[in-house]
Image 1 (spheres, helix red, strand yellow):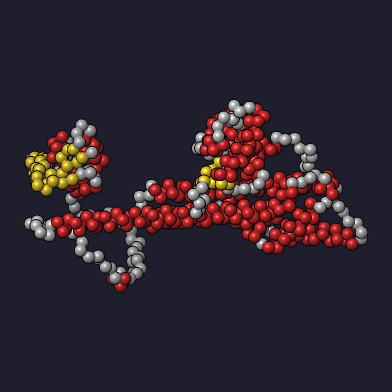
Image 2 (cartoon, rainbow, N blue to C red; image 1 turned 90 degrees about the vertical axis):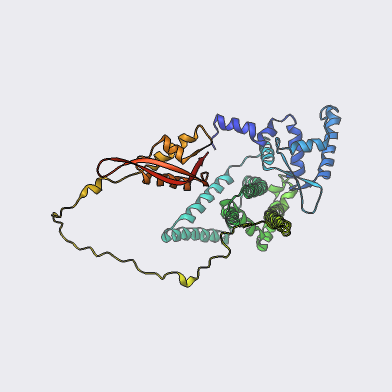
Amino acid sequence: MSLDYATLNLLRQNHPAWRLLCSDHAPLVASFLERAFVTQNRRAIAEADLVEALEDELYGLRQQQGAAAFPRTARAYLDDWASPDKDWLRKFYAAQSDEPQYDLTPAAEKAITWLATLAARTFVGTGSRLLTLFTLLRQMSEGSETDPRVRLAELQARRDEIDAEMARIAGGDVPLLEDSALKDRFQQFTQLSRELLSDFRQVEHNFRLLDRRVRERIALWEGSKGALLGEILGERDLITDSDEGRSFQAFFDFLMASDREEELTRRLAQILALPAIAALAPDPRIRRIHHDWLAAGEHTQRTVAQLSRQLRRFLDDRAWLENRRIMDLLRDIEGLALGLREDPPQGAVMALPETAATIDLPLERPLYSPPVRPAIIDTPITAGLADVDDSALYTQVVVDTAELARHVRQALQGRAQVTLREICELHPLRHGLAELIAYLNLASADGKACVDENVTDAILWRSVQADGRERERRARIPRVIFTR
């Protein structure tokens, strides 16, 4: 994203994170939401619990800054923060519960995370980040290398390094990381683990946006139901096969492995027991951060499953409404038929174009026949001597249908409808019957044109005979009416 003036000005006006930072109550909003959601890693809090926690927060602030500092109630503040013009909280109803729930939006969490980076850090390490960047580059290079010899050479070099390190350790030379290196890596681990939790909320938000787009497409769909289901299934596959979907699924599969969970638990306990790390007084929740990852991942999985169920229920409701409309039409027809039972009308009541389905048997289809290849004989062309009349080549009639359509549009500019006879009076036929048939072809292709079988119009034109004399021609056709 380009950080030019127009982009930043647009973000300042519309992005919820920027609105939070510019808010007069930004310290209250950010501190309360950070403590309620981010620190506790909670994805949904009931309205009563959140109102009670905010009331306690407001009571403490009013004791310090006066009763006029925050005049509104806690519930009013929460409704305001969850309104569309703020969008810092998402208010929703959980399944089988009539009490509103609140969750932090990704934009609000992003603003809170940025505020946390403003605090001065007592220790800034760069060595571990450089190693991380180098490791990422090496993984990308090895993963995209197609030459087997290069891959084998790199693996052999790595094996030599491991053999040399094992030899040094066997000889009593055990290299250890210094305290500064341990602090550097632990600080980076803490930062990445927190960012990973916020990424889950963003992934869930993207899934919810996809569900909203699908619902809008269903509401505005005018095609067949089969095509609609194809579109929806394609959209579901699109997010599953997207880079974000595959990355999330790979992470969740990795974390769900029991051996990985045991390894994380063992290594975290080992690292937190080191004196250099203990001196940093790390957050106790780091010890179980992998359980928080698992809980957040399961919450995202449940959200995707819930969205799928809601989408299916939404489709079932639309099918039920369509079936109900058909049943109402059938009842109306039955009611009208019963009303005509005692006094049936004379003549035909209704005309059915087709009373049975047309069945085409598979064996009626013609078998495949190879195309006939024309035999081309290489014969030299000689000048012909036959005496034929070639005047027919120069008397071909070409009717410009675009010009005829323009005549119809011009005639409809000053009126709502016009007959074909009136058009022919305004623009006399120059090509006779061929031009008249072209007008009729335009009328048949135009969905707004109609034919009045009860009225007959006479179309007149003049044609030149073979002897050079003009003769008037006349065609009688049902009245053709062009409308706007």
